[in-house]
Image 1 (cartoon, helix red, strand yellow):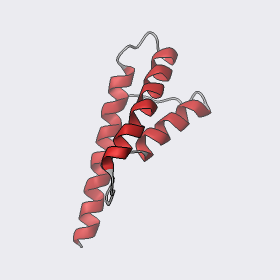
Image 2 (cartoon, rainbow, N blue to C red):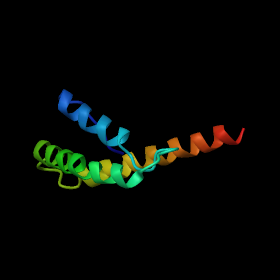
Image 3 (cartoon, rainbow, N blue to C red):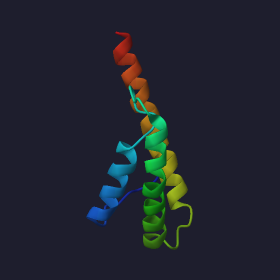
Length: 84
């Protein structure tokens, strides 16, 4: 389990942006454009996490796994709601 401590607004903005700009969002018309815009955002987040957590080199990878888990839960919820 990762314990996330919000150290700054930058951290919160990084998380929010990466989660919001997701190419697997329901109803998205042009996922390729979203994927291209995601790359610099993920690089910025990786740089920020690695700079803040120098002694924890796997923090960024763990964070991405948690974000992926949250997206999966979100997509499943949307599918379940649309099936009703």
